[in-house]
Image (cartoon, rainbow, N blue to C red; front, side, top):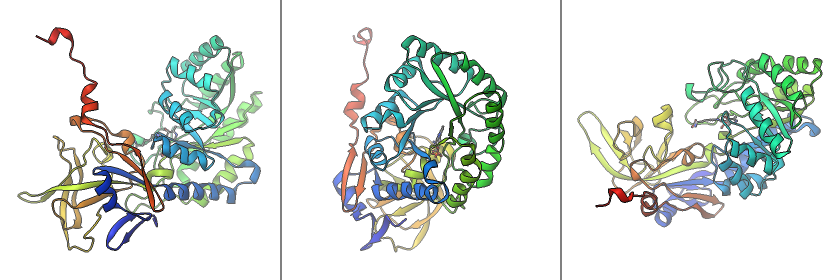
Length: 424
Ligand code: LLP
């Protein structure tokens, strides 16, 4: 990734030194590269432009659960992307980033009444339906509001897709989508509903999907389902083929994007529909580092702990998924290597970023960068242990901006309220 380079012995994001950001903003801090996000968007778009006819280009709806800072959304909006959202909160972020509602698709298994109302009022492009009870729920609200809901049904192909059990979504035991039989039932039901337009299907099989074969496997029944729907007289004019494109955390063999695009051209394009994709991690994951300071080097009986000032509340992925994140020093990058267990200050053993990691010898006060934290990093953070969440910083060439300030502990505590009957 050319956006992360060593310059004069110091790790930089684009042209900005992480040492400078640490001095000016403090640590821990999330730092993102705008150029990297733009590069990833262009790479995905370019692969599609190469393989698919000009009039069949997909709408690339950024799955903003990966990183929902409004500045990141605005950046992707400026690049011409659409948006995939899972909540009213994300809808409001998208609208604040000036997304045209007609480029927003809404997913999720449990949309609430107020969320559905907000989606219909905003006039989103489509609502991806996850169950037949949800179809009835949307119909009730749309009828009441007299606003037609454009919907697609999420197809669960019963295939394992994701890079980890907790991020696989396309197996029958997963809560997502509906079976082939229920798709037919859904289209038939929608036909009798005045305020619901059933327009197509969606599918998202998981995150960190490494091979075209996995997509092939999951989508192999889709053309048959589309054909069957059409033979029953239903219109299928949209296919939302989800996200799941992987990024490099360690030494994974990544999805061949050109081969994937070719597969879309061979299998999806002939179905003659509008095509939607929902990339999340791919666009932002490798754009980010979590910048941290070493608090202590703590020798123990059979190991050395490196206690840093960031923790599982800031970055949950290692604790939650045993995820690997590359860690490197910002300065003193040529120091001899040794092994550390890299841990945060939180009071549980799960607050461990890595065990036995080979790293340059370091000391209190030095800076470390935890890489590939642009996706599912800040947006999954919490105030556990009453820790204020880190700021987010966006680098663009030789400039940077704080796109979200560091939280203050005062603000966190101010939200708690002691009831009168506890005050003596
Ligand atoms: N579309 C739908 C319907 C999704 O549920 C997701 C992700 C995406 C698109 C985007 O998937 P991506 O392109 O980012 O793989 N917190 C986990 C990842 C959870 C993904 C949830 N759904 C992690 O840190 O690995």
